[in-house]
Length: 132
Image (tube, rainbow, N blue to C red; front, side, top):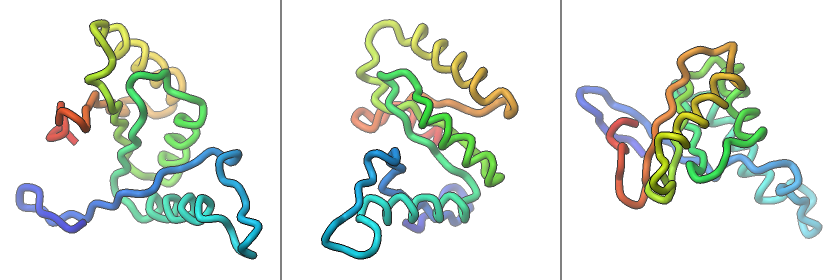
């Protein structure tokens, strides 16, 4: 999606996401990779050519080892990483505690990269989307 933000022209690319290896099952009807595997490879190519990568995670759930693995691969590619904790509207009344736990986990898991931004968003309500 080509758009203009402020005075800058930008290209936004939304990928199908990165699935864990167990979720990328082979397709017996095809000699090549499954659709899931092809989508996974396309997402990795998009990361390689991006300037900024927004890693969208589920704000209601603890950040997973696979989320951290994706974040580390983005950093290894030399890309700017922003983490968006989606579904923040469903976190509940203890937003501060959830946010603190998420930041603590990121600080430890991504210790070699200080200052990775994590933004609480809600696709449903639009909360904090302009910050992205």
